[in-house]
Length: 235
Ligand code: SF4
Image (tube, rainbow, N blue to C red):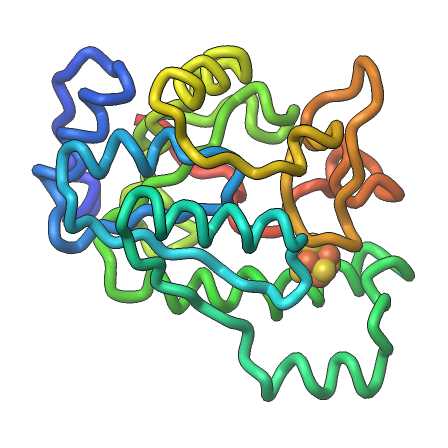
């Protein structure tokens, strides 16, 4: 067992607020919230516990305007500053010059290359000095997320702790919370989107599809992760 594994001694009830309070009390100040603007439930809950907790986000350079607007609404309404991370221009410039602007549609390998440059590498930098990070991952989002734990050891990122406080929440419960607290939300959800990603790689989901079916819709379901949330060990 690593030193980090040994620090995990959660004895709470696994309700989202309890998990967040334990996480912040245990790991602060070496803990941040990753926000992808799917919803602001976890951000809002965490701010009630620690108004100074850092919220970070990755601007891939290909996001929807509605997502940027949601980020602005979050900053204005909840009074927080977002710590933005960007892809390295040394990687994006040769990619676009050599392969064009839509190479990700040509093969799974090209798509993973683009996701690595625009998402995975910036996330690695964002997490590099942390002991723990908090996400809004929910199990019902996709088959690949169905086994997500509320507290995991993130071996993809050096064995830090990954907290998914609303892993067991349904979309209806998320919407109820957003309405109850009148939170800003991503208006792509008014247009039939059930998941939010980069603009050229996300379309509204169709009836009966799982929420992330609109991501890289031209690929098979088993490839539909960008590397940000590869499987970890549940606690
Ligand atoms: S989602 Fe699409 S545009 Fe965004 S990083 Fe991945 S391949 Fe590139």
